[in-house]
Length: 271
Picture 1 (cartoon, rainbow, N blue to C red):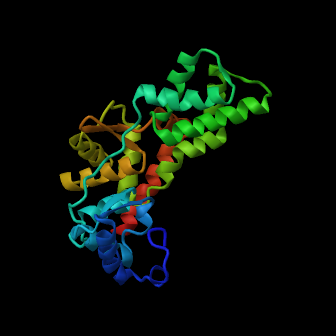
Picture 2 (cartoon, helix red, strand yellow):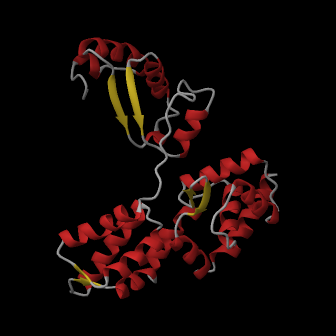
Picture 3 (cartoon, rainbow, N blue to C red):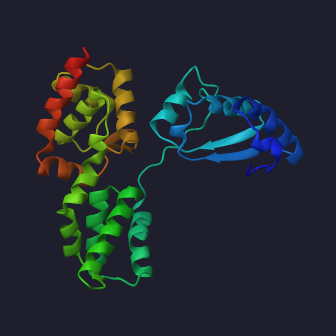
């Protein structure tokens, strides 16, 4: 309806999408660019197959934003988009962009930053320069200083939020969201290690020490799932823990031992 608000569009069904896009391509003098967000929710659905067919025929160009389900669909031999998409992996922000994301909105709101270099260093380490965590920390800083009826933000405020219960739960959430027990076991085991970075071979060795034998292909699949779930981050061809906050809270809360036992039990019950 957004492309062509007509009675025909109002009656559109999934299997009519290819003909619709063929007509629009002719009417507009070229293929449409279709930008789809949250594609994990739809990329296994019936209608998505026809969008894939339309893209193969050159009737449209798809720009898709998603996570694990989209990646697996892209690599699946059953999908019309198998290996046809150019994968753009979003990495943590560079340092300058991360500082701008945290400081510019605060300045626009009229807040003064005391020791900005120190505040920036603290926030960037804890968040791993991940945009969603930077925005979360910025929101928590605003809420905290407004509650204290002040317009200045200091390193002490950052430390205060670091000790906040809700902040701890937010940072730990990626671990709780790991549904596959093998992936969860590997993620938890990596957090117990003291490596600066992880190659796939290192991950296989860590998993083996945790009692889980992995082939290289499966270890790489698990690493990719951990990146998708913000437990690991890309690191110039290898992997690292996504942010210091995740490591800090996993250890500070005594989270790992109990969670590892649960993961082991889940794996044993599976087999």
